[in-house]
Image 1 (cartoon, rainbow, N blue to C red):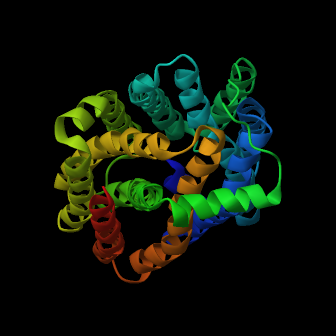
Image 2: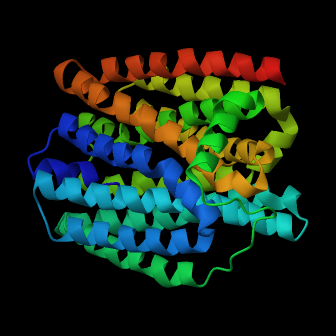
Length: 364
């Protein structure tokens, strides 16, 4: 991630092309997200995690040995398939495990620790990736393929925890779950929509960081260092997410997350300089808080036998929003300015975010 925009540009891609690739990834995720979550509920969490790990590996192998836009599309499709098989199944397996051992109250703490460990690992990779990129922009992808391969034996080592009431494999059942999550259970619906909007906002911001670094002429060797600091920030913040949730309570936590996520876009738009790094640093603190907290809220309301499907619906919303706005945002950057793209994003996030926040608070 710290050098991928440079990698794309080295192969003749503009920001609009880059966002188009990420949009294709999101379209694949949108198409397969809910079916893959349902597959995890019916077929098994562990099996989906194993299969997803294989797709991840082959996706990065494709990136490692190709250099055309068409080949990158294939790689993004493979990675999208891997992402959808893993998303939802991993958190569902974690919650199932805490529930099985009557330790549901520890879920948020463990989700925060997982986020922390993941971001610490990504931070370390950012340093090595940035250093490797100085010699060749291709080298980080070789390393990424190796890391992705490690996920295969890791997923095989997991222990499946059976759901309390396993659902039957029928088409009507998945439709019933979608209907329940998005229409019948209002509290769950508003949780999913608000969480999806915030998730899409943090995902989009991640793709603005490198354009900012390029805009301020940051040397390539510092890309990895900055990415490392940001991921350490997310990891540390995620570790304390359960304490933040207990301190503010649900309602105030929602308000704080929306304010700082939207405010981060506006502040960055007016600080396209080295001060922008401070803005992104603060933004990533609240990204670290938001991810496990909002995912935990969805888990608390979801039923055990359909938890992976419900989490996949959340991921579906995130990817759908990103798939819709990403090409438009890339076009705004290429034909207008980075500032314009950031401000438009702030508006796109704030209006629906405020609506679903209001509905959620009223429902509670």
